[in-house]
Length: 264
Image (cartoon, rainbow, N blue to C red; front, side):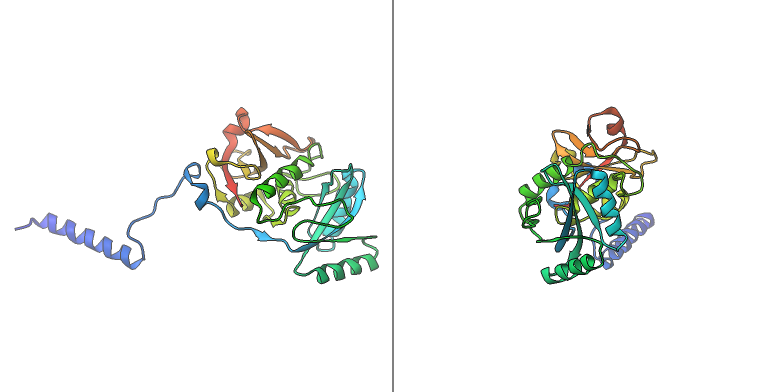
């Protein structure tokens, strides 16, 4: 005869198994640490931008940023960038067709908000307006190279906590602009960007991925930078300093590091 205690144990095990089957699983899943997640299972898609508009050509980043702010007041997401010819240009909006983009551009021109504009195709090309600054989203290698080139174009631009104004970017404003100028829509805050990405092992990092830090302590994400390869990343560190490149191996950043995220 099977002992009473043994029979009770078997009934308990059977009951637990039945509940798991009813829930549609055969075992309780374990959380997977960020540093052990294979890249192949980590990627999450970001929204792709359609046609955008480009306007302005400024010798100073501050003037391009001030223009971007005026467009944001019109309800348009805008980002300025170094176009490689010594000038700063601005791209803004997200339109499903070229015709809708052109119509909005004409309306802004008639209202005196802009003087001239170009329609930028989803592949990043804007005829006559400084050339192409991003690769097609389906070309991952080219897109990663373009993300890095865009981030490098911001080196030395002033930092300002809170957003994109005439004085510069906050940390997540920088990463958002870098991705936006390459046809990808990131969430606004560093925490939301962290949650939107796919975890990636440090050994699997590639240029264009984002690095997240808890610079305020407590483990909560409060800072983000663009990984550019060879252990380096570009970020907006703090008010009063320009956007710069630092090393992940630096003791401060190594201690504050929370995790890496990929979106490609």
